[in-house]
Image (cartoon, rainbow, N blue to C red; front, side, top):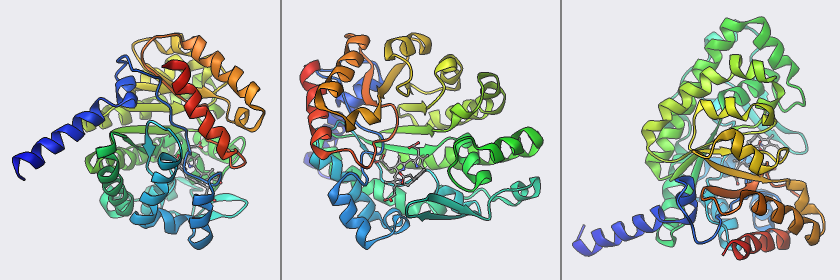
Length: 358
Ligand code: CP3
């Protein structure tokens, strides 16, 4: 590398470090509130649907060029402050010995799922480079593209509990009653399963940071199916270990869950620099519960993007007023963006959040 190249690299790295999103993760003041949207690459975008018309979900995930392209689609279309790598939380389970398929109109389905303690015994603990190589490569490609533009890339993984739910239930569910029955009936096998998932997820997250992710989000989407007391018994020890292990990646960690408003203090104890919250609680109250020594991410109701602009504006204003000018707020939805969301609304939302906070 020549001196000129070296300086160039240092400049683009510092641009990234000084980005609104990463500053907010560190609770430093920003010129405007950063915004990105969970599931921002997806079916609500025509560009995404065009790629999915030609390739299955797993093909897109397993092809680094396609995954990189889809990751960049919302960044090129809207004024968003961070990208999130295109993949899903479930593919690492294939590396452990389960079968995964995304079925149109049904959602993800897992074959050879876990029914007995013996099935847990059989699960392997693959290295991320062996089971998630294409996603790590996609991260390298996106980083090359986005670093000069000063846009950070978020890596992610499912939390052990949410992955355990899918592994036992075999697919999505309202109550995850099969998974919970297993958890209550076989506490030792449950613990073994969660430990194995922690090992797989920790290595995967660390490798994502090494490949170029500037922050990492853990999705515990279904943590809310447990009571507060059971959260402490069956999730907290494992998430705590996960966040401890992943600290070695030296990037900001986002701890996201839904349905956990009653015990956000216990969620926060697990770890994470940023706590991601759903829309059920006013964000100011949530931040108080989390503690102002953490950054907060959220928490617009995703269905508000389906209604008229005036209603959406009211809800955005409510969130921004509630947060006030305390540094450390990352604007986001309280859960993933919905497929019928109009493109114009997403564009207007990102612009409005920046305008109102500038
Ligand atoms: O842009 C991004 O945010 C990155 C991509 C991303 C996807 N899934 C792509 C996807 C991320 C971060 C996820 C995480 C994920 N996947 C979670 C956690 C977040 C959440 O929403 O709770 C969960 C629970 C899953 C599991 C999953 N994958 C479900 C339940 C479904 C079916 C529901 C649906 O929206 O179709 C998927 C499929 C999926 N993952 C799609 C996308 C774009 C739709 C696939 C398609 O038909 O093209």
